[in-house]
Image (cartoon, rainbow over all chains, first blue to last red; front, side, top):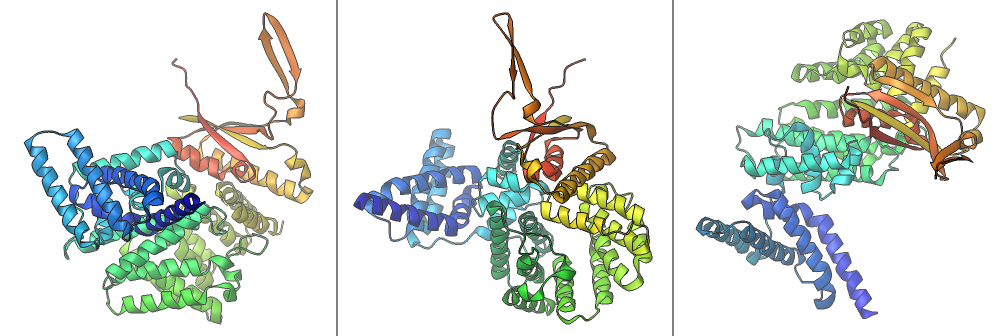
Length: 416
Length: 117
């Protein structure tokens, strides 16, 4: 009985440390060698050792330091096996020294920010940055990441391995960039976090545990960056944007699991605390007077919240925010969203004229919201036949059953 | 590259749906097929009759054996397929996720083993 108890306790402690400190331990172990794969392997071995040793000898008073000490030994052993000779000895000595000095102090420095910047480095292929953050900083396995990003597990694992060897072989630094380089580099980190978040967000009902976790963990990363870089307005802006989206999650599905569009959501079902926090962050960011994409997108969310709560028509303000966004980055998705606001102020014909410019864009041809918006606008002009066809495209491109049924209801409601 | 999207779903589940839900389901499939066609990816597609209509054939010891029923007696059965032509596996998986079959069943994605001319 005692054995079982201490076994469970050891497992519990290991779980807690893995959840809370995985990224911190990995970042620390990988920072000096830049070898993420070797650090991952060593850390995995250290966790395995913990599960066999802790039940017998009791949990150490500082589990993190214990794991780092064991992992460090594994890294040195592995390096010794790989290379021999004087060069290796000198290198090993320096790695060992760096790791030892910190572990001895008992306090492991937080290098997660450095790891974030390495994973989202411009030399790393943009599409793999978000998965890499999820794996290295948060410890998700490749299979779970692959399924959220709609890729085969095998392909995802290979791309992750390639990215990590690129970091090591290209000598990408584990460091927060200098002031003058920071804006561009921070952008990539924020973009990767946001990509992780939006992947999670496509499952608003939260049925899929893996995806819901991504949303939570991406929020955690955004919080971490905002905390570690409290003077970066865009970091605050991203957190504000994500909190706004997350606050409305409970209202995006009816009790029966059906999709509810923003204009029909019950504002009382929104998480008011989260919205207040988002507003405060945006306020704080705006005092820095350096507006960027995320602050502006958060401001759009803030305007939607205000309108839905008070009924005040603020679409002109929304359009001006989109104009500001479009002056920073041209994106067909932004244009599309702007046209929705245009429809509310200048009417559907003006909005359709704007959307017409997007029709030639290949990316729009397979983008469900484009067809749904078009159908919506066409139905307002009385072009029901065309609207019906556009709804067909939107329905055919949607992969969320609840959204698909919502679009089908809209289509069925068209006058014949 | 060509991929076969095979839709596996629970036998008899369709018959249990209300007529309205069946109509909605059909419309979803039609819309998906149309979206595939418009993107130029559709190479072929069919819905299969239930496995109660299936017959299996095999030759053993030079004698033919014909049996009533499907090859494997599982809860989920092959209900239809889409043959699509897209750039890579990721594109095929994106279409598979949009297939209504992914919501009510499982869609297996298999690359076609193309034969040299």
